[in-house]
Length: 508
Image (tube, rainbow, N blue to C red; front, side, top):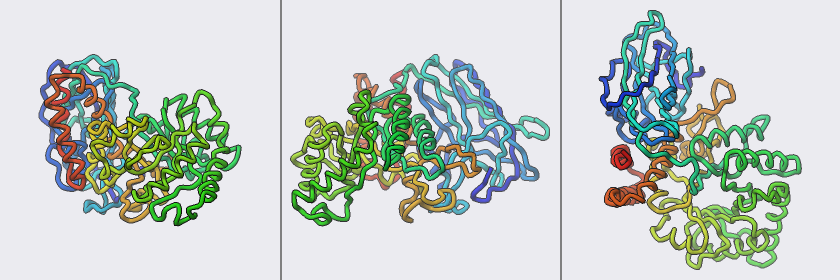
């Protein structure tokens, strides 16, 4: 397995994960070699999805939760290998990952932790200065019996098979099942894969992201000929028919941006607008095989303008009204905050979080539209990973209809060796998944992707609490927490783990 940041392959252990139903919530003391991170040193704060982590898990059925574990070796004289087993009889699935480091604005070994490399039986684990960082992910099956369980993680030397330490992690599953489907649109922008088979690679990425609560996609391929249109059709069969995606944003012919208005680029005449719309309509004709599929009616979005200035809204409205007249079957989207005199030609408004206003959702919903929010600096790799967990809380508080993450695989440069795929200040905002550096072709998750999924699952729990009168005071307090979070998003997010415990207590 390739090590990017010069990890020292000094020592490893055998890990055995054993799940049992206990009926109690006690936790055995952690051993010296395996320890759930309670207080996280500054350079490790990125590993926490909740700010601080207790050696226990409380969760709903159908949910996943994670714990970072420091794996420390007493010596560094020989190379070992790691083995672990998880007994799935209890309805809990256990996965273990090694946290890897990639270039960023961090100080630890020249980078920041983000990629998660799954550990399988006999995989080597490399330790740095006698330490390594593991990521324990626990998933409760939807049909699991509510109750208290425990996961015991044991380490043993592979030369003697002697168990050196064990870590017991209590898991409580409450009496609530997370819904598998929900109305919010969680959309991933998929940059066209650069490999030899973009269709298969796109399908693999869609299936991978569906496991992290994404239920919509944007961009993907931009068919320029009939053969690619057929390829796009097969991708839609997977996205819509197999995975149940409710919305797909079609690739645009071209996008207006924030550097110039329409009139500055093309003039203000009716002919200029008609010519521009005509080219968009002609481009969409390449996708007739998809757009004319009856079972997919109403599933497609289309965007003409990306982040226009508010002063340009009259031009935005004019352009979108004309496009709506030509293609009323498409749901037109724009990445800007709702303006005065909202037009029903725009079906989806997608502003940045800093442009979000309390009353926006009600205004947009009154016109039959949807209000989503656009990815922001919370996604940057230099931010604590749990920043992205806050997205789900934001969707709940503002009654938003979804979230648009503009790029999850923006690999224009190697994300393992460069600070960013684009500009130096981009900080991997467009990278939530990593290619396997070992060349296997598999996709690897990241700390930020796991945190994002955690937040969407938190949103579903918060929504379920809306129907409980006894949770009213708690929800009022949480709305204030999220409002403060939105206003101060550059600061460290609050400890959401403490609030989660109070939320889940209502389902005991």
